[in-house]
Amino acid sequence: MIYLDNNATTRVAPEVFEAMQPYLNEVYGNPSSAHSLGQEMKAAVEHAREQVAALIGAADPGEIVFTSCGSESDNWAIGGFLEQNPTRRHIITTRVEHEAVRNLCEHLAEIGCEVTWLDVNEIGELNLDDLRRTLRRDTGIVSVMLANNETGVLFPMEEIGKIVRENSDAVFHVDGVQAVGKIPLDLKNSSVDLFALSGHKLHAPQGVGALYIRSGVKLPPFIIGGGQERGRRAGTSAVPNIVGLGAACELARTFEEHERIERLRNKLEDEILSAIPNARLNGTPDRSQRLPNTTNISFEYVEGENILLHLDKAGVCVSTGSACHSATKQSSPTLRAMNVPYTAAQGSIRFSLGRYNTEEEIDYTLKILPEIIGKLVEMSPYDKELRALTMRQL
Figure 1: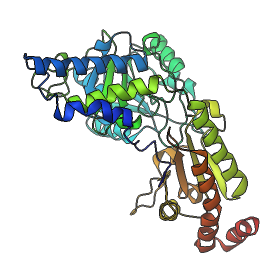
Figure 2 (figure 1 turned 45 degrees about the vertical axis):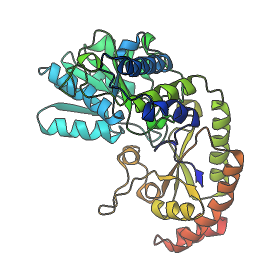
Figure 3 (figure 1 turned 60 degrees about the horizontal axis):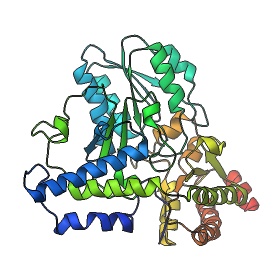
Figure 4 (figure 1 turned 180 degrees about the vertical axis):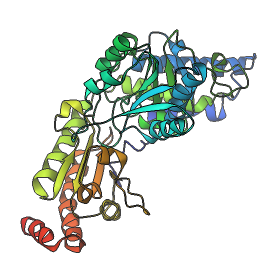
């Protein structure tokens, strides 16, 4: 099986599994216990905290709080700030955020918060002048992702943070889930106050994440109970998963093959766009402004779900970029925000590479994909003249 869906989740790295294993069956104390077995577990948690802090460039490991996932981290950052600051209920975010932020903000708007939604252009970029215009002194929180999960488009985190600082007293939250482990980070020298990450995006297990809370930023506990995580998140620590996250962060910090992954992504992208006439790129063509592992390509006049199923049958795993809803047949909010035409948005596929992908896998994908697209275009319900044009070129 060829796995090109690493933005959805990643396999647990062997090194991570090896680090976790003792804490699944040999070392099993409660990290809150005072005895030696418990203290050994606690030491493992604190070591993992240091590893996470090192990867994202936090000033102090104490700024890292472990959570269950990126969605929890995002919800805690935004919801917790609003709970702590009930008079500052103006939120600024973008129309292309992950559901963990977008759906939360839609819910908050329904219960009385004011949400300003920033638009993107046709290649997924923000207009920072829009941000400047919408910031107010009573703006409570600005929430902007670092890397889009569908297109890989990067937002200028440092510039956004500077604008927020200069034009408001707002807290700056960043959903960094897709970016961690793929691009360099140095949060201690940034204007970011809150930063969410998730383990399963960088070869740790599913079910563990973290929230960076800059020193001096106050959030109420997301889960109320005991005093775990310095009273910031109650519940017995999931030590094996936390150890796994720490090991994955250390693995990412020392990884030296980003250029190889980017080269494979570029080869896949270039040859698809060259060989398949009804293929179009979604997101900026400036690769320096996208994640090095991600490409989102629309195949006009065909359905993304059909492409996915044919690729899966041929042994290749991908995601549909359109995230098509079976009832409404709407394309994803990200592609709609970019004004991608319906006939293209419905045929969008996200290819996201990882450390275990090889050139042979990319070659195989490039070999089978044109034939799959050709067959699906021939079966397409769209205009016959457009189909005929595409088929002639294929």
